[in-house]
Amino acid sequence: MTRDQAPVIVAARRTAIGTAGRGFAGHTVDALAAPVLAAVAAEVAPAGVAVHDVVVGNCMGPGGALARVAALRAGLGAHVPGVTVDRQCGSGLDAVIQAASRVRAGDAGLVLAGGAESASTAPHRVWPGTGERYARAPFAPAGLPDPDMGPAAEHLAQVRGITRERQDAWAARSHARAAAARDAGRFDAEVVAIDGVARDDRPRASMDVAMLARFAPAFDLGRAASAREAAIGTVTAGNSCGFSDGAAAMAVTTADLARDLDLPALRIRATAVAAGDPALPGLGAAWAGRRALERAGMTAADLGFVEITEAFAAQVLAVSDELRLDEETLSGDGGAIALGHPWGASGAILLVRLAARMAADDDARAGLAACSIGGGQGVAMIVERVA
Image (tube, rainbow, N blue to C red; front, side):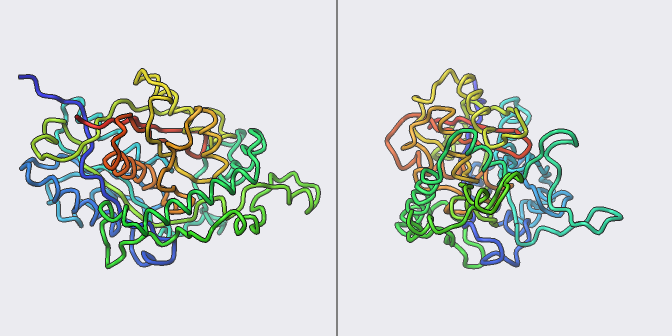
């Protein structure tokens, strides 16, 4: 009998998502990743199969071998290696893609993969000889557009005609749905508690369109001739994500091993990375999502569940428009505007949310997870339930 080597995801778990400086303020990034890795490892341990590798995405940590440090801290054993992935805000999703490639190739049978970020403890750096603080890595070399994500979202809103009213309505939806899901306990099974923190602290049911309308525009494009002109901006702190701490992980293995474990599983149907204009990084999820759909032989109508990182309402709405998504399939329990955006972990959190939403629904259609990335990149994955 031929063994099924199609990669699948099982035991998808995450921490609560903490606003930077609050519940996880004293936790280093490996301290966030380790308990989630340990929980996933415990769930797949009955198979009696060794963990062959650990792949963890991260953007802003201290550098070094985060995945290896977290694996050791999780008690996985000195024999388990680890590798750290940096595709900026898509790092956690790319980590799972890399794990899946190894399983598909037959180079590994069980890999733990995900992402982690601690905005609270990310080190402060300075450029040598200048004393100037190093805020982030360049997304593009000199001579090409290299906007911060906020101004890029404002530019995208203007280019695509995405109004302030539409952005605020989406943000209110995100908060309402996330707060309802949290308070109803729909997140409980996926969350691994760390030092008693087991509840996402950012969603606010009170964050309605009336309250969101009070927020002033947060960014201009550097071309405003007056304060009045600058005030026509549409992107605000209210319709944007927050800096956050959190981690997520899952086991990537074969369908045969998932059946042996009798665990719900998501088969990885297609993956893609893509790149385009660095001046419009918010569209990266659309570029990668379209490529993944093509590889899967699918259209947006075949999707029952979609999770796109809600860095900004303008960005997620532009991606939805570009892919012609049914918005009822998108971020059904809210997204990063309400929950927060722990950069290197966010892509993996999308998969945790897809796994939970798909397990709780009798809709047999596939799910899409996709991230837009600074510098004009995107990463996407399509998953389907294993019968």
